[in-house]
Image (cartoon, rainbow, N blue to C red):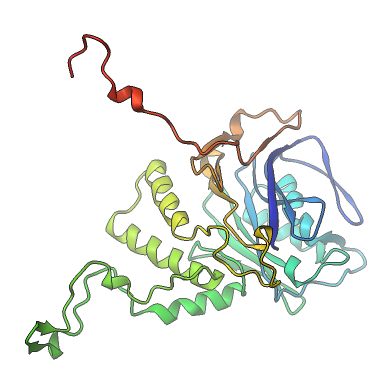
Length: 328
């Protein structure tokens, strides 16, 4: 799904209900959802979120998805409704899996391949999964690599990681046996840093982002494992920065060149399910803002914009200016 506009972080009330294509579900859990407008549409959809039990879901484009047919006796669920349905009903990956046994997930009327998606799911116990629909069948993968991006399907992404086994967390040394002494010294030789990552894809395609996030995270954890939530936030922020897309750098598939047709990283989310905390940042203001779900009231519905209208820059000049008579 190409998201044209990210709007609001929205509190979805615990005691309200979710209306599906052919049924109504009373919400068991309150959740905070990220409301967005998909390209070519006018209605907000929940594209990401976390509920008060720590369950999280996010959608990612999968243009090759083939969804189910509606079946008598099963609830019909539109693809845009999977996230609010799951966040309102369930507390874990296992509960979502069980709930999906009783529903048929189908495209909404007028949906095209640009609207087709798959979902990343995680919970407070550390379980992680990917939900996809392939050849009209539901597939729920256990996400052992803990990475997810857009197209193509998850199995393809896993196999593609094998194409980069030449990367290394250590200094390259495999060519020592063929070194030749020349007028400029020994060749080949390492003359700078970073050659252990030579071949790591740097483009912004989903496939390359998947590879980059996996290898960089694995190497970082190998060298210096995160031992606290603060460490994990620092690492996750750094990883997200490696896949940030500035507007105007990715040629749109529709061939248009107006500013709104270009893809960009419109928002960033860090979710800490075990602490029921969600961190959000926008495209312009890259500073994290925290939402603690344990402190929210679920008897009301409120929302805040993802972008706060600032760049998040703090003026610290005063900290470098001595007060009259102060020794520095």
